[in-house]
Length: 196
Image 1 (cartoon, rainbow, N blue to C red):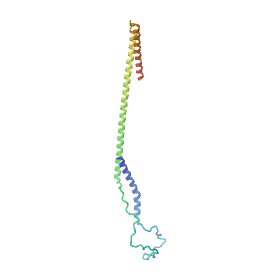
Image 2 (tube, one colour):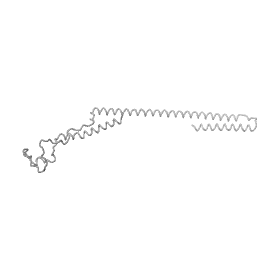
Image 3 (cartoon, helix red, strand yellow):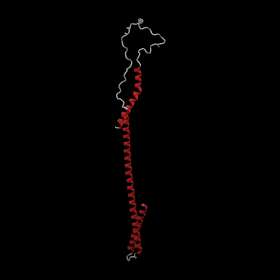
Image 4 (tube, rainbow, N blue to C red):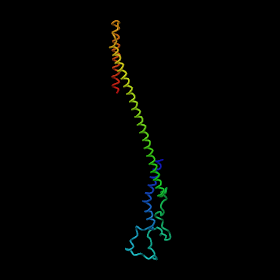
């Protein structure tokens, strides 16, 4: 719809410009009566006019003598050609311009409203992402603290426990298991520390 309105306004402008250019020329031409022999007639002050009662000299060629009663054919059309579309009155043009300006302002306000809504949605999404990252960091911190306390408990239990009265193989297996558990707890604590 915007394209059609623009085309109509451009067309009206072109027609108005053409009318401004050509109508004064047409009015000037119609204001002066056309003369058939205006280019071949001598200047009035150089040759005195002949009396109208005098008969022109006889022609030497075989063309018929021109009739004095015949009207001269019109050289130019006196009425301006009808334009296909009349230019709009100034009041309608001003009203159309105001409506166009109001429509442009409404479109711009709508675009700004949509942009603001998109910006708010993006800000809310980023805030949710930040809150989720904080929640993950707190969970990793709690998991690291739990792993550290577990490692400390295992270490304390290993040091406080009296040596079992079992065989050397069982003792070595228990010590290896305790060492592995402590190492796993330390790794978990280090990973939690890195996640922060």
